[in-house]
Image (tube, rainbow, N blue to C red):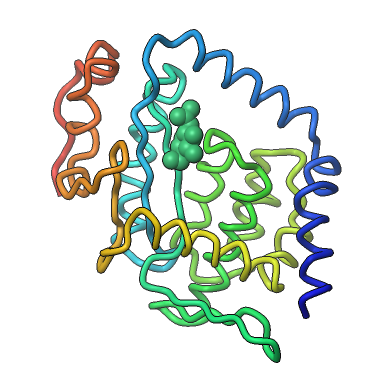
Length: 234
Ligand SMILES: *[C@@H]1O[C@H](CO)[C@@H](O)[C@H](O)[C@H]1NC(C)=O
């Protein structure tokens, strides 16, 4: 198991980005870095944790994350990162490799892993969020792949076969486990999802009024989006 895993990881880290269009990714990163350096203040960091088959996480993506992201991402005032893990657990053993259990069963682990593979491949939230959002809540693995990669095609360089294989292999498990490590590091008391950190601190208020919370910062309050009416609270 282990040597094979290492080869897969080397593939993911060094070869895959190259195959999938390193140029595009590099251009995009340079663009974001340039935007960030021109912005006078660092972005508001929104880091959140959820589960692919959890209805509350799905609602959070649709009603809070995506509207805020769509409206503010171009202004470079926010930085949203997502971790598919939540109330899951993973164990590693010599015989079986990495095995994970998810709150909503094996189908959730599969979908979390698919999201983790997309996140790892595209790296930049601006690139991965629409795809991860599309996959969120899908009952069937195959429709997550078909609807969110094959038909949606938000990225011409994202390969559906590699993503599916990644999600169903030790690489997917390893990538999901890494989200678990991050969660343990910055949200160790998590007992509920979605769990939201704003600039590193948990914000319970952001669970049902993300826009209001984000628009309280001076960087965002001048944005047109923040001048419009309050969001629905649910
Ligand atoms: C965005 O957030 C991630 C995770 O918190 C962090 O690693 C990254 O440095 C942040 N980017 C910026 C430009 O602040």
